[in-house]
Image (cartoon, rainbow, N blue to C red):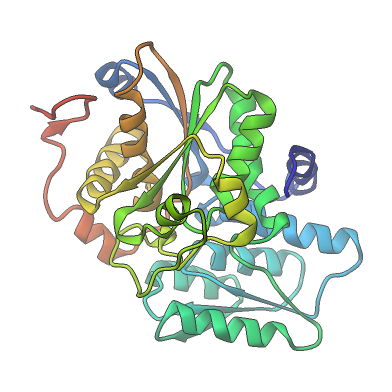
Length: 333
């Protein structure tokens, strides 16, 4: 099990290589909701997402133990691919990425621009099988997207940084794909203040984690999900992340219309390029706040900002900005 000491050590190891991302607020949103919402802008991280934290930590640990490999392989739908490609270039190790053909074109282009070779497969499952086979070759190391203690500890540094930047947080929220970010957030929050609630969000169309938590066993998606939140379209959580995810305080499944709504509003209010995968977390925040009797201070991890033109077109196909955010019934302008 990953510990808070692991996360603190990860912070020390990766600090020379990553950005200390800022905290953002919207006074309009705070006024409409009646609570204080803080946003940890990991969309401004190098490579555009929190994933760099885990990838850098993984390779930093190998370097620390004089165990850097001859070649790195990884499987990813995009943000992890970019992070591993960038980290591999930083540590002078060649990288090959295995991905489904539906990878976001902008994420694919960025991955290749960092020098990685990108192998595309018809499905994510096929890519996962191929990367496993490649990892069995001599001198090759597989950096998984979430299911490894080094990755979880690295991703947990985002919450550690955020909760050091802002005091007296009552709740922290993060999206969940494979669970690396959310499980790292849980470990961090529990260590810093056991009274902080941790809330997760997942697309309803890719709700393997929610089903796993209900069934108390890891459940997998049977087919590729149709969701704009492509960063949370993983087939299943892993055994390392699932054990930690079991202690989450609340977990919400978010439909596509809510994902679109919050992507539009957060881009508008924060003036940031925000991915649907993390924008959906705001629906979980609203669900949480609607049950509260006192004013709360909430931290939301904006996990990434890499969006393809196709996704942007779908997001802005119709206007959601004529309906103001609220905790009750929607308020039309």
